[in-house]
Length: 243
Ligand code: GEK
Image 1 (cartoon, protein in one colour):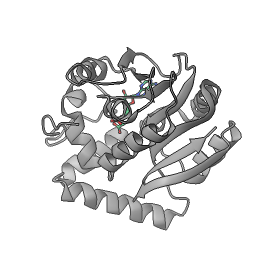
Image 2 (cartoon, protein in one colour; image 1 turned 30 degrees about the vertical axis):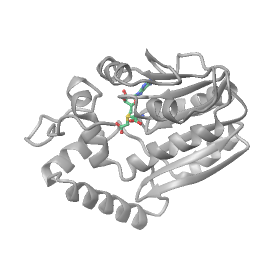
Image 3 (cartoon, protein in one colour; image 1 turned 180 degrees about the vertical axis):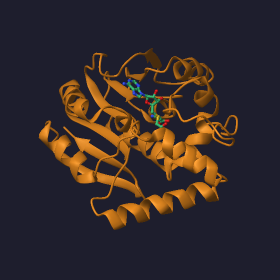
């Protein structure tokens, strides 16, 4: 996705407040996510390749928590089958508004429809691919089983879920090392100590990471047949799960 404005939201001291996906964030989102999430572009390319391989004719693909629609557009580019539709869902009106501009500017073989709403409320049917690209981490842990169950139920047999998450290592020493390496990654991308620490505080109790084992157990427990990690860089990973 094309870069827009530079993320300077936490450059000056801010009153402490929880992170929100508001207009300020939407305006700088491509820069923010690329400088904050190791391997983000590689994951988006992977989603395109996987959609080419797995999406079946006349089915739906869902991008849940689509932000500006990078994964929706990747699927739309990758899908070779006819009669498909990509549905991008986000509950941030600022994200959906901006995302519509990106979608409208792009010519697609497979149409992308955007829905502004809670991904927990929208119906999910006849799906061959579902993407949760760094979204589940923002949802209360208590609601995660129900979301994964709803996705399994909405997928056709053989369908795939791509679940990308910031993760926690079960060993504290390893977890702290991965956190440090991630902060080094952010420093190397031009974020200052103040920006890193203010963002970290804003995300406390908002972004709730779990271990890869917890995610795998949930995916298998809710009905996926097989699960594995296909991408990992520091404490960021992407898993694929087959129904
Ligand atoms: C990408 N997938 O660029 N319902 C719908 N949307 C939600 C909900 C919810 N309950 N909770 C959070 N969101 C994108 C990046 S960002 C990840 C995803 C990040 C939305 C929220 O509004 C935000 O746009 C998105 O999930 C998470 O591939 O910023 O680290």
